[in-house]
Image (tube, rainbow, N blue to C red; front, side):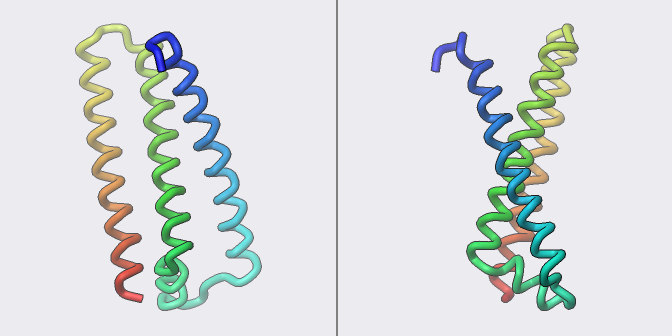
Length: 114
């Protein structure tokens, strides 16, 4: 994609991730309303299921991507000094990377222990 279409790519990523986030939240709320896991073992089984853990990992990946694109666009639009913008983007990016490692660790450990 050309440099001129990078705004279109960010827009598409925001919309695609928002659609998946919405669908997963509806699914998750449906599970909680129909047959909520009662015990710790039931929650581990829910998270440890291969399809469930993959869907949850995709949910958190979409959430982090959605957050990155949104904050990046806001910072690019409203923070004009370049060094402050780069610093804020770096700090936020490191925070999102750390969050992704923590989320992946929790999901994969739940899958290994079930």
